[in-house]
Amino acid sequence: MSADATAARPTRPGGALRTPEAVLVATGLAVHAANWAGSVLTGRLLGPAAFADLAVVTTILMLVVIASDAVQLVSVRSAATGRDADGLHAWVRGRATAAGVLCAFALVVGAPALAGVLRMDGAAPLTLFAVTVPLGLWLGAERGRAQGHLALTDLARSNALEAGIRLSLGVGLVVLGAGVAGATVAIPLGMLAALAPVRSRVRRPGPPGPQARRATRHSGTAVTIALLGQVMLTQADTLAVRTVVAPAEAGVFAAVALLGRGVFFLTTTLVEVAFPHMARGTDAAARTLTRQAVGATCGLGTAAVLLTALVPDVLLTAAFGSRFAAGEPLLWRYTLAASLGSVAWVAVTARIARGERRAAHTLVLAAVVQTVLVLVTAGTSLQRAVDVQVLVVAVLAALEVRPLLRPAAHPDHHTSHPGGTR
Image (cartoon, rainbow, N blue to C red; front, side, top):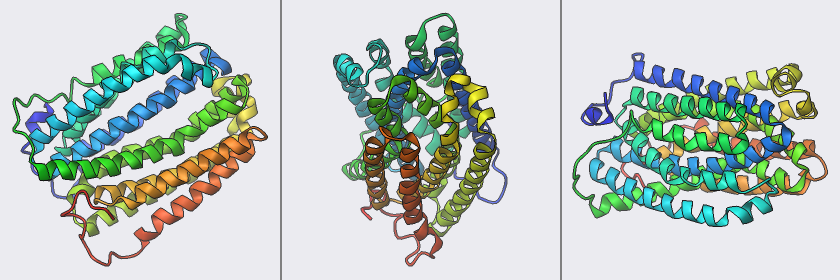
């Protein structure tokens, strides 16, 4: 079924097991496991120094994912609320793709200078990556429309296709000797394949009204701020470390980060399923769903921290090789930081779904503080840098989860204002 066939599909009542949601969760878990395995294999093949270069590309990819997710979540809200849905979709998609083309041009022009600042072996991976920017934003718009209409099996197929193509081609090209450039080329090819299940075919939709465009801009601003904070919180540390330590040491840190972030990427699957229901439902229902998601994230995080503390050698050295053994003492600490960050992200996303913006600003502030502290401390001790991260995200998680433990004073006071400024 295409995403268009679901445009008139009503919201399913709660209470019963929703097969599409289960499919999306199962696919998300499989995709994250495949991403992890592919990254581990690629790191083992490339070695620490080249893997550090690939980590730069991956971090810039996360910037594209920020923008793509922002477009996706804005499209979810417009599709879920039914306000000029088709016209808004075309409007958002067109502007997002045009912005992506401009950003791609800027990346191509600035690639040599950026590669020099980050001490990469060359600028070719950054130049090859540029096409990913407009493609990722286009894909975000199409996925958001499918998600907003609850076409979750189409969304699951899109996620699976992207991961399958990117990982199989990326690892294959690295094995054939293409190195970091080969792994980079596979990224846009995976996105291109992912468009097929979710691409919309709405013809000549009417233009959205000014009120709908204004609400979309407000919503898009909040989502973009939140996602910027998210990627800084989870990804900027690898770039910061890359600028102050030797390439091989930075590659070890990147491997630790890859394993430690596993809980966060599992959490994104939970958020992907819950977000449209949070946007559609009452305030009380959204708060209940958010508490359940926070509880599940806490459980995943606790299990991950215990596992990484007990068998770091199995998870890191056995996976990446003996050249990465120096990162074993960091692994459980980084996993704890990532787990706390995942809890904060669930809470922030829930409030964005209800039209709030204040939580997004808090997230960005915490991310900036963390990045600065990592830059200051990483040159003397990577363990100290990770301990700083644990402290920052622990405070952030406490601030974001605390309001969820109180009953709502004014139930449902956001739902009529998707661009609310709280």
